[in-house]
Length: 427
Ligand code: PLP
Image (cartoon, rainbow, N blue to C red; front, side, top):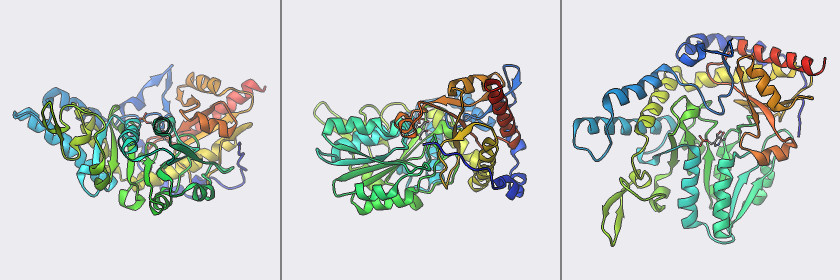
């Protein structure tokens, strides 16, 4: 499925020039030390934000400060440093809770990232409540981390995995979703924003339909949280997963939000220290939420760094970030359309973040490597979405993904490099 977008309309930027002047992108760039570095003798143009984002100075400082002067293990200590570290870790949980609109802070479980959050739900909720013949619905847009954990569960339980297919433009076919939903459906797990096509999925509507059918819903927010203001009460998901490193925070930290009432009913995912109230050789009493799901020493510095990333984003304002990025996204798509022989994959009405494309006669990996020679970082490959590549009928794509610090000048550089590449391969 390849959609070539006609270049008939003025770009979104031309229609809304005032937005970009309101967002202080050049000032924002100064907060990110890595952005002033050079790569292969050229100024770095970082357009691989769907893979991971760069970190602002405040996040780097929060992590460094913790290790330099505050490091201790949490919860169990009676000494000063341990109390301080515990306070900071739990404060980070409060920040996350407020950021996503959780009802109570114990609905925020710290994990290693989106992948672990989804595995937690599949292994804990899934193993306890999914039975032979039950059905789990995911979509054709999913990242491997929202496919494989459900496949593993289905294999173990004899359950069936159902897939919401794609429409020609890269949106989900919700008509088919309606038909797939039945009393057999136990879980509906979908991404809010595709890491390949940039499709924004109407998750609120999907979660409501899942609930009406008696199923629980999980939303993969790995790509949406950096670009949009997300609100658990508004989305209405039972579970929501995201990663700190895609949200301008550290790697190795992520979040599972779960409705307290469901988390209470679920068995622990892992056993060990910190997740218990009492242990004897005969019997173990588990801790209350959120401790029940946080066995062992967690990534304390990571949680503190994620809290600092949230402070940073809130100081800029998620609504402003979203408005700026929407404009940049429109500009990017219109500039790419001008490159001869370039096809943007999919053309969803609502889109953000990632833009995947192919260039006639040039392998995506060659595009990635040749752009790298110019200091431009994009990604090429299957983007951990091999089933989606199959639907698109391509083995791989080149993908650029902008973040809050990218500029129109950088998009212009990318477009002119791509035009140069095209000329190189088709003189
Ligand atoms: N879901 C989506 C949509 C993603 O884009 C990614 C990572 O690219 C993941 C899940 C997995 O995230 P992580 O590797 O941080 O666990």
